[in-house]
Length: 204
Image 1 (cartoon, one colour):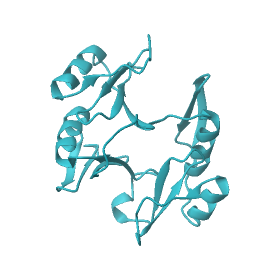
Image 2 (image 1 turned 30 degrees about the horizontal axis):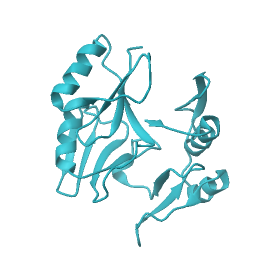
Image 3 (image 1 turned 120 degrees about the vertical axis):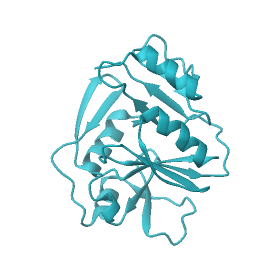
Image 4 (image 1 turned 90 degrees about the horizontal axis):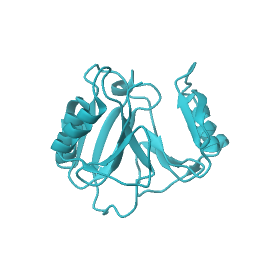
């Protein structure tokens, strides 16, 4: 998951502290946040506010979760403990607003080789076939996408797979080329069928 930030070091430090993860950097303007030693649930909302998070209203009403924003205004939800998220780690779900959850689940399921867990006209949920890590959820929204996403997904081909071949495969599924002025970089920028940006990384 990639977050655009005005101050990558500050936002990276917030998320590292929020998740109990570590930070590293691969160069100026890039701060990586990676799993570290632990994550403590009790009094999480108060701890996040102390780190710089602020309450956010996205029309959630009387929901059983708390909506906050990080120091640059990126909204996120703090869920109460749920059995379904027992082994996800601190990031339970990555949620994407979209017009057609069923179609998005079809594209992203093929793109990631993840398993479809639930699909309705209002939302669809995918997860790694290995049953580890966060869920990827697509929720129906009537709001049209008008600006680039501040948060996007980076895909990493399987070890030994050719990146160019993977990009070609994604295009057959409905992805399109995307020029963000990225220049000569080791990743390829694409858009999914609803225009959400994502990157295909070079193999490590």
